[in-house]
Amino acid sequence: MKGGVGKTSVTMGLASAALQRGVRTLVIDLDPHADTTTGLAVSRGAGTEAGQLLKDARRTRVEEHAVRSGWLDLLPEPMRQSARLDVVAGSAMAATYDRPDLRPRDMKRLRTLLTGLTGYDLVLVDCPPSLSGLTRIAWTASHQVLLVAEPSLFSVAGTERTMRAIRMFSDEFAPQLASAGVVVNRTRADSTEHEYRLLEMERLYQDKLLLPVLEENAYWQQIQGAAYPVHQWPGDQARDLASSFDQLLRQLV
Image (cartoon, rainbow, N blue to C red; front, side):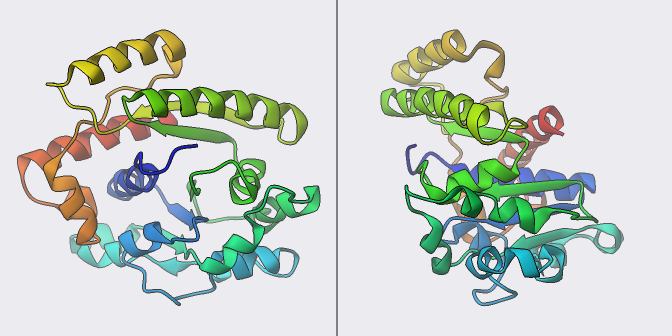
């Protein structure tokens, strides 16, 4: 429930870790801004976009329309042969379903689309920063929700509200749904405020707070701007960031 905390960044970091481990992954970009699509080196207009697939959910199979991530071309040849990272591209059309009065049958569109899905070990769904229609569509189809927060007052408050919303939504619409935990992003070791908020999060979330926290990294924006997997970027700082995502992925998969 707060924009700019790094949901897309974390999605891309986990996708990079999965690619490095050989985990066959499908990334579904439900954010109408489609930043994940761009970051995973997929050209706009490639494949059938998420909004159209939701519209045709009963008549189509998602694996027939997902497109190959351009990240695969950046892998060493031996890894490239067995790796799989596909993307359902984001689109402005998906905003059609991002409304508060979504009907229950519309909330099931992604779940219907993924029924019988084969060939993947992991599906990551990147959501917009709201609890409106698209996020509820994603939750209905998912087993776990991973929350991303910054060590700030407003982000902590938004995360608390979202965790309550997950529990309420699960009780009413998606009994399989659980909170996977909270990833803290963009922390600074020299910030007293960040230190205070981290202690607050430890108290509030206890075992739901995933470690390691992701520190502010000057290279991260550059890596994303180049549409590159962090595990293939040179340098010690990128290597440390990649290691953090490896640890997070191990806790989720």
